[in-house]
Length: 235
Image (cartoon, rainbow, N blue to C red; front, top):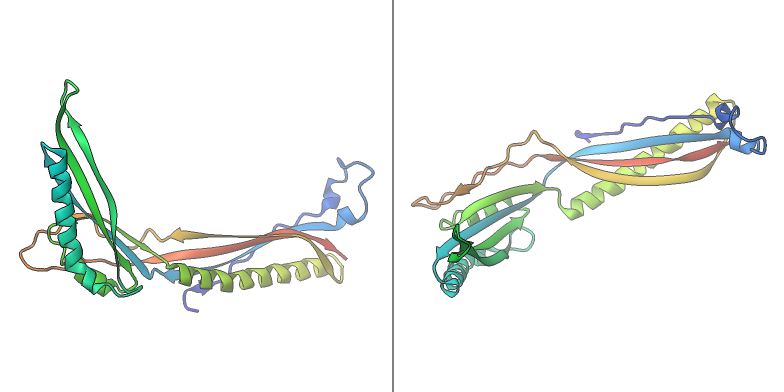
């Protein structure tokens, strides 16, 4: 794995170092307890793109603003809905709201509304083509991530690597302190995903070109990390 590496470390502390402050009732077994931790991580190419578009409308009459937003949203849906294709491209509506605009005196002086359309999926090229059809909408956000399926598969593989690293440390520590085996007393497994800040992200822009122009996008990487920690007793 080109972008895979396992980083493991341990922090081993013999409970016997606490004998000076421990009560006399602490048994000999507690004096052989060691705390360890290990981790495995991998940089994974982001394979899921979500682009959010919005249309805004101002007016003196709330029903008129709402009707205009619905019409423009329907037009946008009609332009891209036929391109939807499973996980390659998903088309869905987002937020829809109309709210009053107030004057300095506190009275209602008009209405403003926003309707959103979301394009998401694995096929970045197809999503870019669909975005070119939305010339009357504004791209307000572009988000890249690792898909749920890929993240789950990667976590499972890293979990095995981290556990193997933890077991190797436990065996090594046991041998180093002159014991032939160990007993696992406690184990905890956790994970997280860190976004790589180095990849370029498209800023929001209006799609007002005379001809269809795909919105430029560029994915990056997420770092998935799995940690294993626990206590063992030297035997």
